[in-house]
Image (cartoon, rainbow, N blue to C red; front, side, top):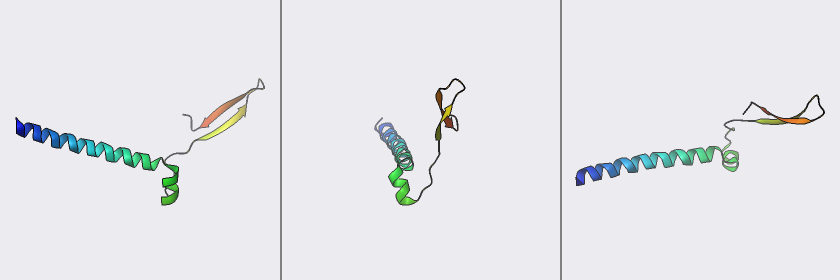
Length: 66
């Protein structure tokens, strides 16, 4: 039983380490200052515009649609 607990602990530690590393990488990739320092291009770009409607009102338009 102690062997199973030992192996289970190794598996959990490995999975936790993998998830933590992935989350750290994602956090770096969406950090504006980090990308400016390292010269990384943005992962995605969304443009926001105000467009006039026929009824005289305005609407917000996202490009690409989100």
